[in-house]
Length: 511
Ligand code: AMP
Ligand code: ZN
Image 1 (spheres, rainbow, N blue to C red):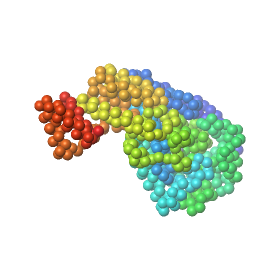
Image 2: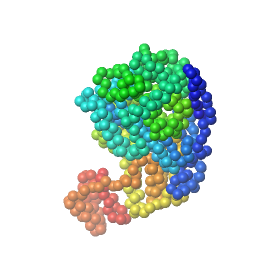
Image 3: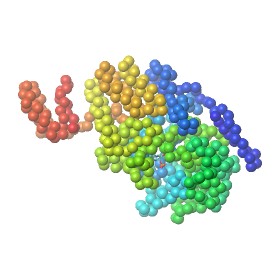
Image 4: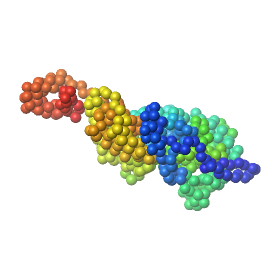
């Protein structure tokens, strides 16, 4: 459905029209690799759980073969915590699944480097300024530092770089232009020095969060701002700063000031993806306020339905609570590294749960993920050695059946836990030639993003003494002196080196 609005003086009417465009169906794997997956035809229709409507829906893009995907980025006044990173891992798996399916994905992500309104309500502290004062730096320096750190984290997690990354501070004129459209359509009022969005003018307000305007009027827990007509009205442009020493200010038709937080996502997504696009993502915390307000702004400006699919990840919990910067209970990738968990162990940990389930951070869980990934790497290395560098065939009959099952699982709202089961099943199936197992595993890893193809045995620098012992053991074995051979094996094991006898000769690895 599409809805639009037209205006006659002081009156706005909404109408709805059917909003069905694009191809009828797009199948997972159907247009990949020169028809490689055509074997399965339309068997695997990608289904995504749409928060708008709260149900699984077949994915149909607006334009055949391509997808517009917008993901809310980080507010860069601190390091990303692993809860934030769960959101970006989920979005990366979504993007990879779309690409695996043959779509060309235009993936846009913002960076919130205007810090003052990073709180959902309009009452947040100026986090960027606070961080800057504490560090003796300017807000711009703080934003630049944490933006770099954020992208380093994403890279270490094998999260693909978005097609477009857009910083809020580079797009103030776009935000002003959008606010002017909203104002021209009659959705705003000016009060106490700030320009507000009047939610009573937008009857669909709260549709995403399943809140009616009546619910919102009653029992609001938002801090009352006496300038607002309704507690859920929100600021589009501030000229009255709540903060002393406001550093980030721009000229605007409403006076020198700064934008409200929500407007940046409406403005930048439409700039890079058009006034209507396919998928918008974020964590579930964004449903009731940020995304609700983004929809109100975009649709008030254009009079059209804005986004077709809303996908939200559940929280990473610390203990029983949401991990969050404001609660101070947060853990970064660096902290995990200090405990011995690599970034890809964390990615593997996240893949072990559906993105729509809560996930508790725990040492047991992380350790299990670390062990699981180590076992996976070891299996891949052994298969590589068995295959002797041969290029396998992922569509050989037994490998293909695992791949088909994987596709079914991932196409059903990104069921990564079950898809990982398919990977394990494939790797362990001795009936499938090693090279074919590898080929199919690499196909699956286009979605998992675990870097399986690059997995190599850790190089062990053997000192001369160890080399001499390995050689002595080989000689002892040839001379059938197994007692000495075992003795040497034990000596090396105590030094953390494990020997394996294979038809190709002796191999060693770190314990
Ligand atoms: P923010 O910088 O607060 O806008 O957060 C960046 C992204 O992380 C958003 O998509 C949030 O919804 C998401 N997020 C924040 N906290 C968590 C959490 N504990 N678990 C999962 N996602 C989160
Ligand atoms: Zn956003």
